[in-house]
Length: 349
Ligand SMILES: [Fe+2]
Ligand SMILES: [Fe+2]
Image 1: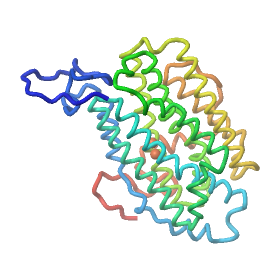
Image 2: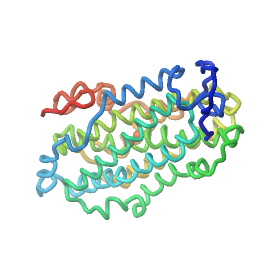
Image 3: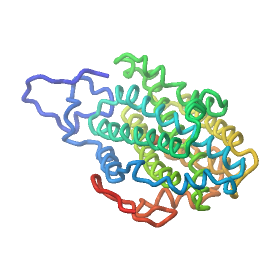
Image 4: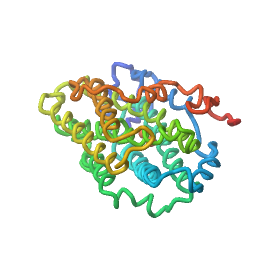
């Protein structure tokens, strides 16, 4: 939020001068090195090593399966469209929050380096859903308006956006007050912990279940890459939140912890309502109860990472999801194709 320091000076910056936020004019936000927050730089390197593009993934089999009349039931078509409809706008929403709100407030160069990488990945995710919707010949008007027209999706997006507008309206000095910092941290929780760490997972587990049945392989391959990216985004976000709290311990007071706990809890309820709307009858061994358990299990893990007590005590009904996330993607989970590559290489399928 502060102007970069740029003036003639013989005084060099040391790591001890650097902070996550509120650097003001004490350090130069254009100087990446010396690196203080090594974890932020490492997340940036991890993101670059995972580079992918949607159009490298063939949608041929998905198109054939979607056109066939004997593969998907009406319930399955409904849930596929609901999942794609949610993501079609949610990825743009995340990108906007990142660039317009988070980037302004976080003036540490290591973190900004990662934020720039993440912003590009969000653009790739937006591209992925546009590519999937277009490839399958879905009604674009229906898909890209779903966040306004389907209540369960509208409620999730409204919840995610509820604390962004106050960050957009902040003045530079607001981050120096306890209340301003708390508003900003709550926005980070809404973005990284709730949207990327809870709201995306009902869709991930549902779509990847189709992949486990050899349905929608191109869509699922892209979802798998997105899940891999999102898990890095969320991990970065949690490190960022904890680092801000560590440097500004006065914000982490009991009332604020209770507020954050409730904020996450209300998101779990909204995700359950969304799943109920998507999946009224159960498909492919999934039902509302199992996904509810899974979302609660994830929420508990997020609470722990934020150093808050667990709320649910649910176990993981989908251990295969951990494998998808943790595989580090030497291989495509479903088809065992080698997919890991460094930037610039062409994939050969
Ligand atoms: Fe994304
Ligand atoms: Fe993301």
